[in-house]
Image 1 (cartoon, rainbow, N blue to C red):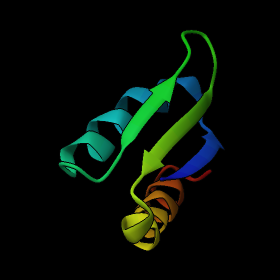
Image 2: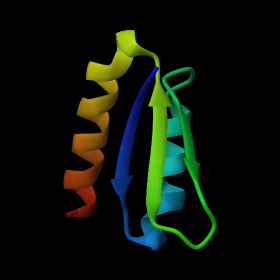
Image 3: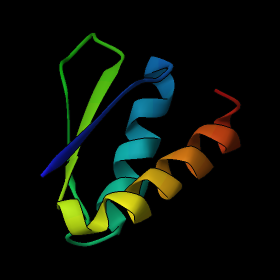
Length: 63
């Protein structure tokens, strides 16, 4: 497993969770209530795909 850790504006965490979880089986997102740090665990063989998705989403929200 590979863990991606990144910070988001708190109002964007729900959107990210929705998009990331829509990629069935790609990874598991965790974040603590009141914290803007997100941890996303993905299988090592899908890390490149996951990284590209995160980059695209971060660009979309302007972070």
